[in-house]
Amino acid sequence: MTTYSTVYVGLGSNQGHPIHQVKQALLTLDTLPCTHLETHSALYCGPPLGPQNQPDYINAVAILKTLLPPLALLYELQAIENKQGRVRQIQRWGPRTLDLDMLLYENKQLNTPLLTLPHPGLYKRAFVLFPLYDCVPNLVLPNEQRLSDLIQRFVVKELHKLNV
Ligand code: ROI
Image 1 (cartoon, rainbow, N blue to C red):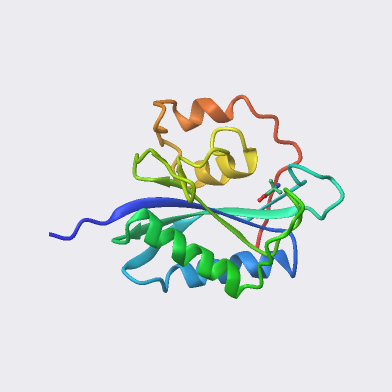
Image 2: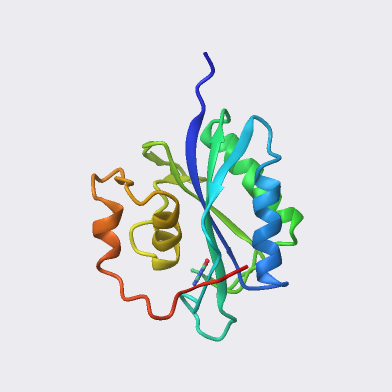
């Protein structure tokens, strides 16, 4: 029996037509080997976390079903980022054409120089948690916290769901 793993991926862009970048990445995620896109959230627009002298971000979350192990999937995600023109910059938390963050891979916990699971920003970032809630409102996170409880703590007047 082949058992697919469920993976949540956060998408973010604030350069080079961000809506297009995110939509294109969603299409490409569905073409990865041994992987398909199960569903995705709406697209959201919000101010940058980090330096404020950069454009607003478009964010979304995708749910993948995959047979790839975490590091093989990471390699594929980085290949998509590179193909869509991502240039790794010196400035920490600077603008980017496309970020694909592996948020959760089943309930795996991993701490390697290449990949940390769950993603270290998962519990803290409204632009990740709200799109995630769109997809799986009843999700229980690996620290046993309910996503629905966690998002109560966030004031989100600056995060807008887009109709695109
Ligand atoms: N801020 C927002 N709103 N969305 C992002 O995807 C995002 N990504 C980043 C940093 C620079 C931390 N800020 C962000 O990498």
